[in-house]
Amino acid sequence: EAGVTQFPSHSVIEKGQTVTLRCDPISGHDNLYWYRRVMGKEIKFLLHFVKESKQDESGMPNNRFLAERTGGTYSTLKVQPAELEDSGVYFCASSKDAIGFDTQYFGPGTRLTVL
Amino acid sequence: AQKVTQAQTEISVVEKEDVTLDCVYETRDTTYYLFWYKQPPSGELVFLIRRNSFDEQNEISGRYSWNFQKSTSSFNFTITASQVVDSAVYFCALSETTDSWGKLQFGAGTQVVVTP
Image (cartoon, rainbow over the protein chains, first blue to last red):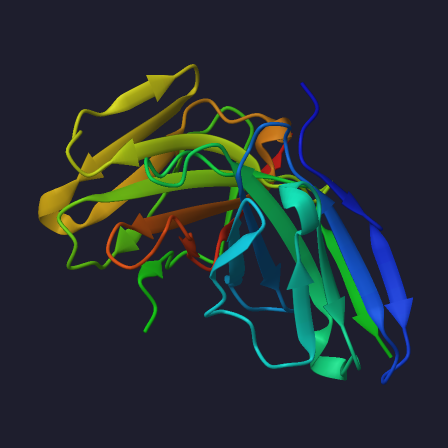
């Protein structure tokens, strides 16, 4: 069974540009979570999808971040326009059953550097 | 407010020594879940263990063991006879059941360095 995959693994962009991160969850997992770790800080929750619906987006820092999960499969996280403080590692995780607080399995992360 | 505290920033040990990582959490929920994840140098987060608040039995998996004590709100992790491959950042995380939908709240992580 394939694990959670994320693309790209690294992205270096200039301030003001747009970047789109992609996450493919484990097949059959309805729940998809985005987290990020900025330099020196804790891993922080961004948002949670149940299938294609946003269940909780309380962690999204501002309206420059837009997440989608069309069709309830893969998800994208777009940052537009990117700022220096957006640099960090963005993790995606998926789980089968949020009601039971199933284990979340993480992808390898996307390291975003904004110059 | 920080709900998961990992007070140890970095622990350095020599191979074959035991190492214990502390995790203290804070919650008002009676039902909650605790997790440990390992982040090796390659960067991915690897799931190690999930424990619910009603199960206070300690657990052992090979060289890994976990000590869950509700009375002190702690969920400590011990690596016995450490090996170089154990070098990684270890994260403790809490999932509350009230208004949470499973989101994880992480501690700051503890860097473990095992030298030969």
